[in-house]
Image (cartoon, rainbow, N blue to C red):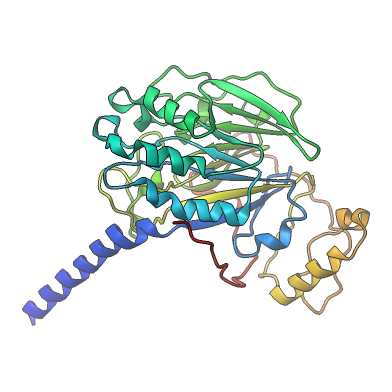
Length: 371
């Protein structure tokens, strides 16, 4: 009996190790968040984002922590390329750690890496900051050159402003605090949306005018990279903020991307690679809280009917009722913004503001493949 138990344990450990090395690191998770100017609540629309494309004024794609190395080659970016081709975001941002260690980088892979990065396309461009691993072995100049050759604008204590007929936005990028002198203050602008890129999320408490920003996008944590239930290792620079969305100030969302590549051990377990899309809406009213998940058929019918309404009516219409038999309200009741208690910390490490209970899986998109 003891021998059988030992064999079963060995087989189980082998299966877990095989999955963590060869399967999960190749699974790409896509997340879609619908964000309004009132950020007290955010909707996870990952399984129905196409139904809300009319509300989003701009879609921002966020990737982080690629950690290319001899174990993680440029072709592993194919699924990200497919996702971007399917979703067609307006802007792509990358929050650092392009390569794991410049000293160990296989130079012959450089042309392939540039080619793959060039295939990440968005009409409003691509913006990046460097991570702490990009500076290892004096690799920052190499990484910056690779990103620029691939069409990225690299921000090191700089900000850029852009606008078109739909929206105006300002994007600032902070140099990695542990490897280079960082600038934690930028002058306010008149842009409709303010975005800040910061590789290590725990340094958000040093930003002097945090409330100015709508979104602070970061990475670094890998979500622990290996998770067993609530147990996972935490990385310096991402011990307070480890994954998903937080509300560190009344007007500012912090998003921690768990990344795509691996560092240390080439393993992922319980934390699949992810690409995150933010669909930004100019609407000012907060999302209402639903006690029960929406009836999905009713939600689809509401979406169909809203497409037949005049534009002015669509602007005023609210979310559907949780009761499919009840008449759908044309105007959502206004709710006051949530004001934090000044005597309490702005956010607890586990306090996520995203509501993931509202939508159910509808279908699995068929992805175009990349050779």
